[in-house]
Length: 354
Image 1: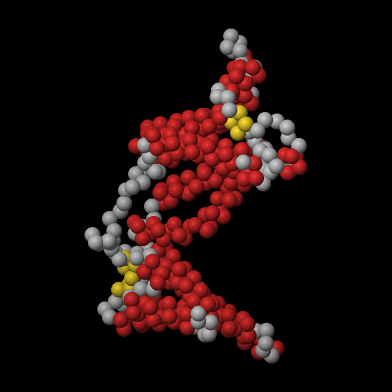
Image 2: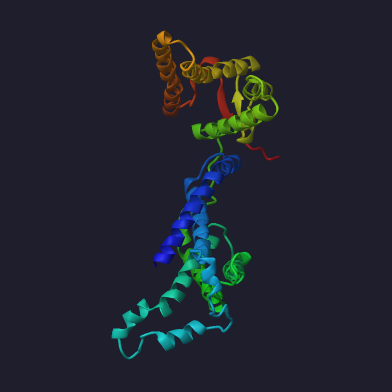
């Protein structure tokens, strides 16, 4: 049991690394496809990834020392089907005419190991039915391929990293794991009708959430960094290009285009005013950084004044956060520079031609 828990801990750690790398791309795809985030779908999708990573972790980890594996002399594979039943009959304390042995038999390794193999792939069948809408035949094939990949990784001695397999390739595991998935499929067929419909979509509207705008802004920042580092290393030309020229010309920044949102204004002058005013938020942060850096080079008698300026601009830098809070509580979701310029962010609704 301790071995299984250690493997699951490794799997959870790997999952959070995956989550960190894939979260923004996932949100972009969801906003482009549905215009919103379905949090139940989000939970089901990433719980499936967590399950899959942990399942593989349990078949691979913990990794034994190479020299210990080199000294192993046991069998590398079992190709005799239903050997687990033979082992249970021979070594289990179970006696059908002695009820006192039944509980002991359930605690014996000859029962626990096949039972855990059954549970290992049960969620896989559930996800195939509920999340991916697969048929029974497709579930059978995919489940068999999944458990075959488990066994082949073990038989390959972790792709040749070890001198010999450190776990047994077992045909019984193939059968039990596949059966577990089919049981999971059956459970999903019964209970999925009581669970939320993952394919239910909300009617699109032009209203844009602040989270959707924030992701678009992150995309713009990445582009500013890349272009500024590789192509326009002088001054703030990359910011001017991505956050100034492009939105005035296309009525959206590159990040907003990717997230299928755009700036709506009476004319391009309003949009230009919006973008110019939005730079005020950056100016506060830049000013704070300037005075922080300046504190290491100025004379000692100027430090107090410089310190007050740092506090002033750091305090003013909190105003954009307050503005976001006000926008979140308002119906229009407009930020201060949008209210001044009489502009707003709206969604680009899909048309029948798309």
